[in-house]
Figure 1 (cartoon, rainbow, N blue to C red):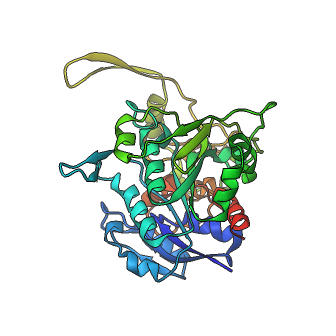
Figure 2 (figure 1 turned 180 degrees about the vertical axis):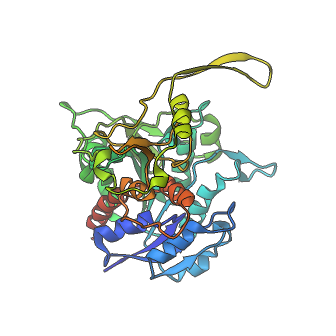
Figure 3 (figure 1 turned 90 degrees about the vertical axis):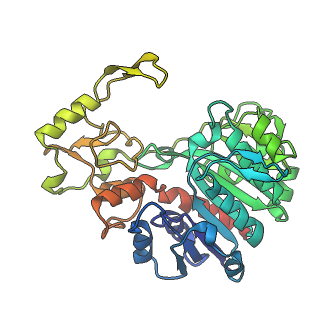
Length: 399
């Protein structure tokens, strides 16, 4: 028995690698799509193709993908880390639903494919701020997503997970979203389980990523989404916390605290021998000292209002006895967020290999593309071993 996988927004293959680490025979990736519209050179796609040989490889606009082709592959699972943008819903002059936000439509491509193909499961990933956007109507975007899956016959569970809490060397917080087709047996069990027990003990995430149990049985209250998704977009005023699930349009959410496992320290993943080009010049050190220092800068808004922008002081180099901060796509460049370390030989950038290790990829997974793009792809990637654990849990549920 296998689960046939469609890999969307595939990047350099973190989801596929994690599932194959869980059980390469059980998870068979039959089709993938990776396309970066703003770039002539498709580095992530080429990296993916270099590391995997089986399945169909698609390098085209996801909006142009014909679902009939995918239906023939009979996929059971769709995975993907989709871009985080705007998910508000509007109604056209004719009363039909429309979508605001150009990049936000990429989420709706997931909905389109799921509606047409009807996989049993979806496993998605995004930045954790998705749960609280937009700032003027916190939680609306995610509530719209929940309503969208409800409307096509799916139920949803989510959890914000920090990789460093589960053995990682990076404090990378991401929201993972597990979606199940309504006719599956798992949904019957969810309906028969009280919300506290499911969320804290029996859920998809609770089994593999355990959280601290309450000394008394917490009541996790029910919230109900409006049946009209446009009204959800216009009027949502609920609360979306770090863990939760939605079934039949009702959702339950709670702020959970993980049972933290031993992290890996940044110093433990550093390479022993590093080329001279990664060490900072004197000029670069001066720039970083300014960028990481305390600042108060006067700025002026477009309408002429003056204000003071403040930044606190950061340590001059990143601490090696702790997990790293989250690596971003700008890693390796001269920015305030870039990691710099003192390895005993000098102060330097992290190497591309070290960034791969922070996401628990094999060394030199991205070798063959430029350093700039190696950093970029790792800034967009996920922690592979978190997916491995989810894959084991999903196999258990499916069997």
